[in-house]
Image (tube, rainbow over all chains, first blue to last red; front, side, top):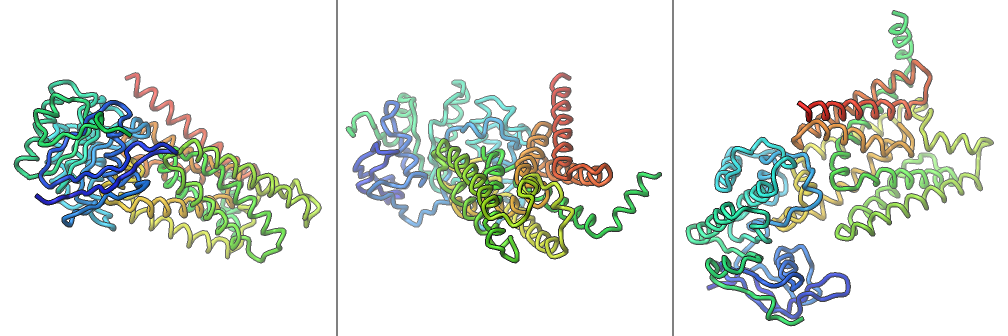
Amino acid sequence: MSALLKCRQLTLGYGNKDVVRDLDYDVNAGDYLCIVGRNGSGKTTFLRGLAGLLSPRSGSVELCDGLKRNQIGFLPQITVVQKDFPATVEEIVLSAFQGKKFFLPFYGRAQRERAMESMALTRTESLAKSCFRELSGGQKQRVLLARALTAAERLLLLDEPVTGLDPESADSMYRIFADLHREKNMTIVMVTHDIEAAQKEASRVLDFNSMTV
Amino acid sequence: MPLFDTLLYYLDFPFVRYAIVVGVLVSLCSSLLGVTLVLKRYSYIGDGLSHVAFGALAVASVLKLSSNMFIILPVTIAVAILLLCTGKDARVKGDAAIAMVSVSALAIGYLLMNVFSTSANVSGDVCTTLFGSTSILTLKASDVYLCAVLSVAVLVTFVLFYHKIFSITFDEHFAKATGVHAAFFNLLIAVITAVIIVLAMNLVGALLVSALVVFPALSAMRVFKSFFSVTVAAASLSVACSLVGILIAILAGTPVGSTIVAMDIVAFLLCYITSLVRGRS
């Protein structure tokens, strides 16, 4: 099994505090990896490191096996800026394609269809023309997931994907991940508090509680 | 219609036509970028950079350069890059940095103008630079050409990279994680912002530049719900307010910059009321 992401001696932190220290870890193609741990244990920091949002203090995160950044889908947590952002769901989901090409002034039919597929999967199709700031927390989360699915070709990075969802929506989200993993051989890395679900679905679990920093 | 005749009479003067052309171009550009800046929580950047431009202008006039643009533009661009491209994850620092740079530039600029004053009426000069009371009516043909070229460059860049700008405005982290060259586009936004602010300074003066950047975006955001419609509405509103403002200023003899901003405030209030009425029904 080939590695998609290789972390070597990885140290990540903010200010003058190290949150992750000297971590050696490989994410392999085909993994369904759940990252668990207490608040402040460094799991989200680690995910940000994998996503390239945080430069390592020392060590490295390497994209292997020909993986490119624009083949990655990413579900971040909702930010303050987004809560009152005037944009339609469709505009947001389509923006997933901007990483694919440097110059992309228009979206083609194939791209619109792919975006609609992702919206159908996350049951946000009927919201396509709705304004993001007027949606409920759970709906917002599903829209950002649709965007992540649209961008994801080989790897999906998820930061607490079921936050703010009712149990039913959370279940349907887990089903989407499981289907992607099984049928499209998508590699999934998920930060979660939901240990039960993590153990049920994941092929590997990385527990930050057991790591001492 | 005597009012209409007066207007036609004034439109015969080239400087009035210049003012209208520059006014429309600058308000169009500033409102387009204003949407992004407001949403990225950089509303104050207009204020900060316009003070920097004022400081640079003071330096330029002390050095008696033939064209002030050659010093104002590079200095403002450099500061814009410094403010917009650092400290994205340390917003408090960025905020304080804008305040610091803004106040320093204003103070040093005024100091230089005072110490090395070339005219007898320093406070009048400063007032003109800050409030742009007459500068738009004293534009030369070369100013208009420069302004037109820069505005068209800004417009073309904005249209071509509209979706990229949306993507990094809505979610810079997602954009960066999925392969968008976020650093490059932030740099681009910083440069465009600086260019627009220097242009807008000619129109409404350093102090009122913020209004031109912030008001159309805020007004449009009250009423419209997609990024595209907000952008189009902000641009249209801004152009309309500037046109009406310039015409009123010419006919009534009021200061151009302040009149335009007054129109922007009226437009904002109208949009605000519209959104309230809509919320009720």
